[in-house]
Image (cartoon, rainbow, N blue to C red; front, side, top):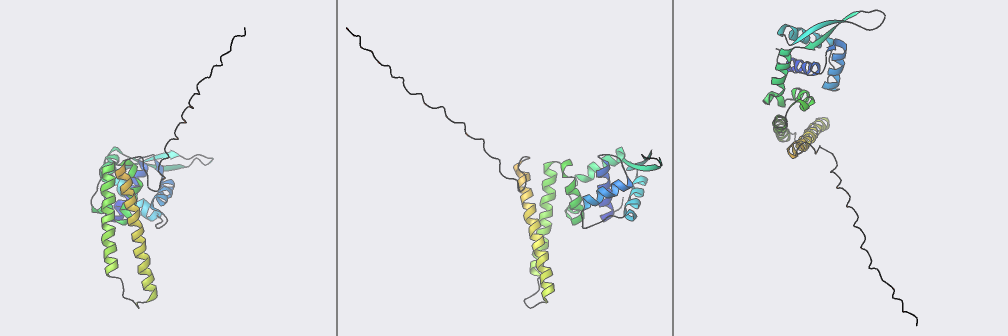
Length: 212
């Protein structure tokens, strides 16, 4: 398997194929949604990755007839048992590579397939990595009088990392609290108290005097 960005892409492909077989066009569309607007995946990156995965036995090709008048055949990719086993092992890896920018984003997208302990270790590792980055940026920040655009870029970078650190801290707190609380969710509303039944007034009996 390829390393770095190639390995991240291949793991994302396996994650998507784990749900259902997909043809190249649909796979690329879903990968672009998964990877976000910061990176648009080209076919020039996708198909070499698929070829590597075919050679490794992680995916297989199935030829199907496309609907419509033309009845053209198209290739659909599906995950193999070896691919499922590989994905299950990699998605639970909590080593330093899981904390890096692109790898972390991909793993976060598949967090629902991991347990809380794995999620916590990755979130805490990511926060620690960003805190180190933040400390370095503050120390290396240019002195007063530095070019205003360089200063603005440095300020923007520091604030961006600070926001992500706060976001990660919220996620970690929610993960430790259990499955119910979610980051940013309003606390549950306590059930309304049932009204107490009104006390019954004592009955006054009127005594009638007998008329002689």
